[in-house]
Length: 372
Image (tube, rainbow, N blue to C red; front, top):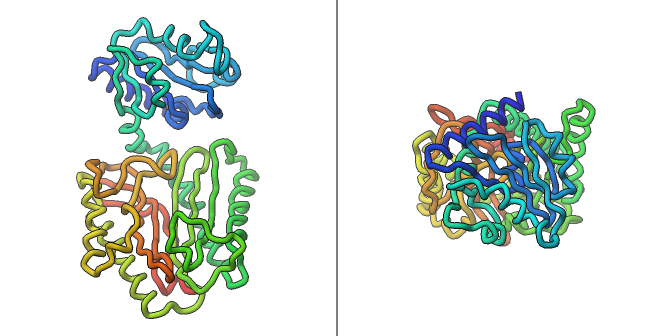
């Protein structure tokens, strides 16, 4: 099944190449190479490329260190190796890559290539493009199955956070909960450790007002609003779930702010369907919060794409021109942040369906379910 999936991805890329008139396409980012080959590697400072052409099998350009490793890949590929980085004249990566590209007339290069790498191969017949970025946004059934699997485990850890949360629980202790799914995956032989990253955290109030801050990890969880987060990537595919919860009854102000957050979330979900511009989803949440004088308490966009990583295109943001399409997977997470009080944010992994959307993360969302 995996080999067929990889071959289908390459076939789709070749169709786009042919339509554009490219006879070769260069892919260089670690995630994109994994997307087409399922080869895991650590690039460090050594560049790694895959050259996909219309009429021959893909060619991997890799450091000598990785040559034997990549030849054991799933797909049938050619391999060209360079000595190391940096190398003496005649053995550098750009010379070996040039030896692969010289026979092609019109070459596309995925636009996330490092600038220093692009400069080395830039010629009149080389053009930047975003074929891979566009293709990765639309998930196949194979990918959706794996994202659902990850989302389910993220939900389970969220429930474990709720069980563990108490006024005696330190922030640091929550991260240890990731050992539970990790051990289960190992026992069932379902863990690819090189493509798995499990992060579970709780930001207690009032530090929860700084979503990208880092609280004192030895601080104990307080009354709230506390924001619990499970950012998971399991065997190459990601999901995220976030919930605002309380230990004891929230104040009147906290209850109101929680409800404003929930209404902004509902506003965003209310316009979510194929054919809608991503900015419209963001504006639905923003416009709701603006009505109640809360736009100044909004620190970020409404969401972002999820797939091979927790943050990727499409971006659900006011400045986006992306049109949402069936089988895209995004987050919906409008937040309200009040200094000295805390943050109010739920985040879900959401699939765009034929007629609307489906929540792939399903941890409790209502206030009365989130008071412990």
